Length: 350
Image (cartoon, rainbow, N blue to C red; front, side, top):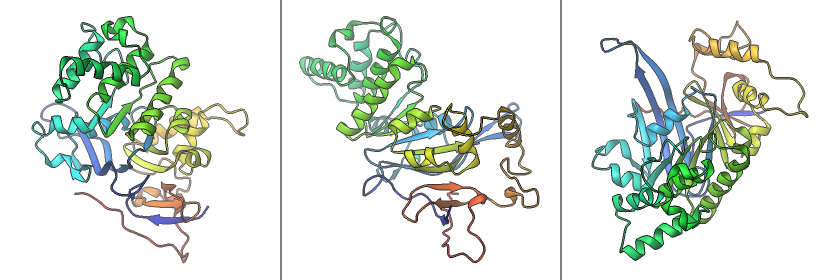
């Protein structure tokens, strides 16, 4: 497989400026008490963009940093460094409290647990009406009521459910309410953090189809965080793979999941049952890799002890044809010495 060294990720999906662009985002958490200087790295130099009207899936194991990235972008966590650009403007340079409402009118988050994100003491109407009021979207009583009914219809729910309490709805219906609440402020970007993982398999497809419908009809960009590679293949235009707080591979979903390049992506794909695939999933190898990644002494995927990968930071290499947007960050894809490949230095944000 051919490779070319790449620079930072370019805007994708569509033309013009991306709806959301993440540059060099890093996040560390202090550990060990108030006086301790120890910290754990959750994210390191993450670069990712969402084109307008594009769905990007972010996949990886639990603890890889997916939800931390979403929480940083939603400004629920403060990044240690980096930039978050919405419509080309770095939101981290704005005053956090003064710009919070305007930012959340453009970017909304749908959480994993639909019951935990809805106050059981209030009816469904309260959640939607409150969103309209906070963000200045409410009009007259009649206009607001029409808007509430439109939101319910958009997410496939009956208007009479506005008078229901969250416990009276199914898990899928509650998640639709959470999506309707996000839509109430007319956002450009939705961060969906495992929106189907708490739902029965039989109702997941309905939520996925709803997300696709919103993308197609309203042009909303989405970052879809998931463990489910099958749903990423079904829903997302592109898939990005996160390992130990870093993006290690990215490409169009069908191409990446059919031809995984990074050893970690190959492990993720191998964990999905497939009778047609040769070989088998090796849980012992997975356990070894999880232990090895905690040590900076060597790369967990390095098979050659004479050439340790961790001696230098890997850069992005394009895999496949020159016009392919599939890239991988791994020394296994370094161009051979003397080959005609052109290199660009990856952008770093101090």
